[in-house]
Image (cartoon, rainbow, N blue to C red; front, side):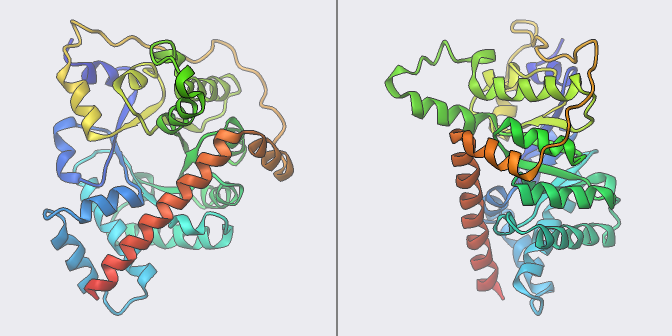
Length: 318
């Protein structure tokens, strides 16, 4: 029966969550995702420093944001040599509240991939699931540029992404878990809130069931895992994007001794989709969700801070 990783692949498309493309081959993922923090982490390693320097040198006269996109796409191209499926490349988080700028940046990133001979069906543009980001994705999807809406913590974000016809969403399991654990303090019971009872797992499960029940074609990709238990509790989800450390843990466990059980399945019958959300309804529902409001803002700040650090590294090489 193979390892737990082998068994998980029978239920779910496994995606590697890393900018370290030299780690990928051993896990044989279908797709890979990156973000500013992962790219920043990778370029600080000796193995990847020459790639950064070479890319900056080739585009030294360009504007800084253009060089950044060249670096992101260069990593994406290397990843696509390893994975047979898609790579997700993220738009600068500092554009999270600017629909037009997000659309423009996404178009440029895609044009760089296409210039390198990569077809659109192998690239997902990652965008923060703000109202502005979701509306940018609506425009891009209509142009055939498929999107991965990230930093997704609230059910209402998933609803709006479904309304917009987004290709894929990345609900964050671990960060939801982090918030609830911190909020509960000494009252938190780790054993009682593990596996299918984990608040992050429950959030993804609810979104998955909603999409399948209403025939919404947006793919659900659980992300941001803290432990293997969270991953296994979402076996059956469309996709799961997993860090190399957790992939290694799954690969190290004999599936015969500890078999993977499918937890998520589509309902047998479907219902008509609800009416689309208005902007006001979206903003109010998100505001009512303290966890999602806090984690979305925090996530954008963290990604933006790492984008600033990557800018500084590139400037130092120019």
